Length: 325
Ligand SMILES: [Zn+2]
Image (cartoon, rainbow, N blue to C red; front, side):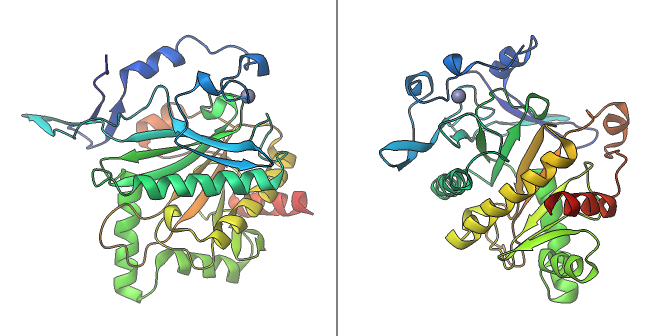
């Protein structure tokens, strides 16, 4: 039976939450020690353990990256959003897509994977996003990867995920709002202005490599958070050129090595932020954010919505530059 997944809005704060009942089973109880290769559903030889592949990249006669629907998706592909309201209470069906991109045949951290694997995996992810955006029901496409159990990864095998949502997530909507205001007031795209300002100041720059700027953001939500910003990005990661994808992959790889020196094997999330699937995308550009998860969010974050940590980004950039030498 297909579970009923919903996106519900908190009538007090307006915050939206995705409720996907079949996911609970895999999060409770504790997942225990990481899976052995023999039990790993993402390893070569175990292809039949996953849902059938939608797309694969092959090198030298074997797959090096595979895309398939998540077995326990946060959002379901069937039906329409069926908006529902009863007085104060409003929801839509959580209609969307949730895919897994296995990024390599072998187990490795991003910092130890051959860089070619990362490039192939990113190319496959962009290909999948371009396919998904043809579905008119989807308003936002988000790419992310979790590395390490504390970052939410349920598998030790390197993988990324793509979700297609029927609503524009609040973080994306807030970016669109601010970027439009900035464009109206200054005539310049906001992300390009931030990129130039970071390069001018220099104190938060970790490195710039063939077009991709890697810097610690002015107001990071996490200690040692880094942003990877292309020189002249299109609206969303789905619009990335082959050159931008290659540059992003090399920069992700290089900064992962520096992060590994500074935060050791702390879990790390990587996420893309850019334009939603809307008509007016003028002045919007994509970038990727990577953030170690050093401390779990607790009551302070829950009560205020503010992130709390102890590392200024200027200091983080200094340590990452040293580690990058
Ligand atoms: Zn595996």
